[in-house]
Length: 538
Image 1 (cartoon, rainbow, N blue to C red):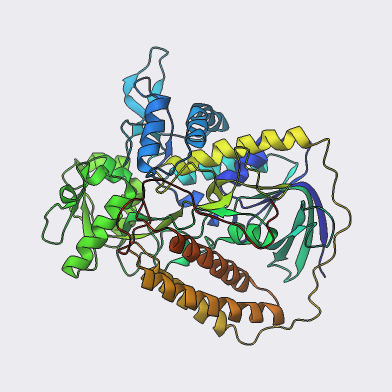
Image 2 (tube, rainbow, N blue to C red):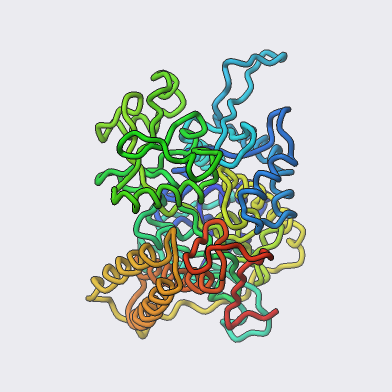
C-alpha cells in the first residue's frame, strides 16, 4: 500500500550537490535525500580529476574566470562564472573541514610545519588549481559527505527511491504554480509513495546515458530535467553535450574514464603508429579544452578508420605514475595494460550535460519552491563547453547558495495540505518489457549516430523524427502499465533527447561542443538556446 511522507526539504539525488545541501541546511529541518539506486550510484563517486579553485598565491580569481570564459566559447554568463570562482576557496575550505582527504604536496613545507595540498593542472587551465584526492577525488568527497550526513539525525537517506514526477499546484488544478512535493516509486515495495515538502531540490545529475557510449553510470538519465520541464520550467543550452576525450577502450571496461589529469601531468595522445597528432589541431596540444581534443580524436579515428587512439604516460617514472594515478593504474592492469610501460587505448564518450534547468544564482527554477543544483541545472557557468573540474565546484557553491535562499523563506512557507495519492487503478503489470529494452537501445544508438560529436541538419532531422515516434510509444506504454525504474528512466531520457535535438536544430553555427557541418562558422553574437514548455507562465 502506498504511503504519505512529510519533510521540510525533499532532495532528489544523493551526489555532491544533494549531500552538500542536506549538510548545510539547519539541523532542525526534517530532510529526505532520495537515491534511485544505492547511494553511491551517482556520477560524483566516479569523478577522478578534482575540484578547480583559486588556492595558490600565484593564481587569481581573474585568471580562473578568464580561463572559464575562454573555454566556454563566448556563452558563459560572466556573473555566474565570477560568483562561482569567488566562492571557490570557501567551498574547498568547507570540504576540508568535513574531512575530505585531499592529496598533500610533500615537497613543499609550510612555515607552520604542515604541508600544502597538491594542485594539478588540466585542459584549459592556465595554472595548477585542481585540488584532488589522488585520482579518486569523487569517491573521497562522496564518502566523506555521506559519513557526515549519516551523523545527522534530521536527515533520512532513502535508497531505491525513483522520483516519478513532481507535484505542483498547477497539476492539481489549484491557483498558483508552487511545487508541493513528488511522487516516488519505492522499488522495495513496488508502490508509488507521496512525498509532501515545503521545498524540493533536483540534484539528479545529467543525461549522458542518452548516448550509446558514455563515461556516466546507468542512472544519468536526465530525470531532473524531464521532471522540471513537465512541471513548467524552462531549459537552456541542452545542445552542448560534452564528450570526454579519453575513456578506456576495451570490451570489458564499461564506462571507465581515464582522467584528464594524465594529460595535465604530461601524457601524450598518439595514433596507432605512435605519432602524436594534437599539434595539428591546437597549439595547446593535449591541454586544449575537451571539445577540441574530442573532435581531434574523432577526426583521426574516422580519417584512419581505427577504433581508438592511444594515451601514453609511460615516459614518466613508474613510481610517479603509480602514486598519482593508482586507480587508473590498477584498473588498466586488470585488463592487461601496464600504463607505466604501455599506451592506453582510448575513445571519446559522452560525459557531461552542460545545459539543464534554467536557474538563478540561488538555484531557483521557474516554479516556486523548486530548486535545481549541480549538473541538472543551467547556471551559465559552463557556456558552450565545460572547463575541466569546474563541475564539482558548481555543486558546492550553488548548493550552499540555495540553502541561504531556503533559510530566508522558512517562516513564509507552510507544509503543503493533503496531496492526492498516486492513482494506479487503471494500469496493469506489463508483460512486454522487451519494448522498453528495445526503445532504450534504439534511442541511445540514434542519438550517438545523429546528435553526437559532429552533426548535420539531415542527421538532426532523422533524430527528431525517430524520437517523436518513440515518445508516442512510451506515452502509450506509460498510460497502460505500472511504472518501473526502466520505464521512468526511458520516459525521461526520451523527453530530454527531444529537447537536445530541438536545441541543436535552433543553433545555426558551430560553437564549443556543438559542431555542425552545415554551419561550421561562429555567429557574430553569442546567444543561449532557451526552450519553454507549453505550461510555462512568465
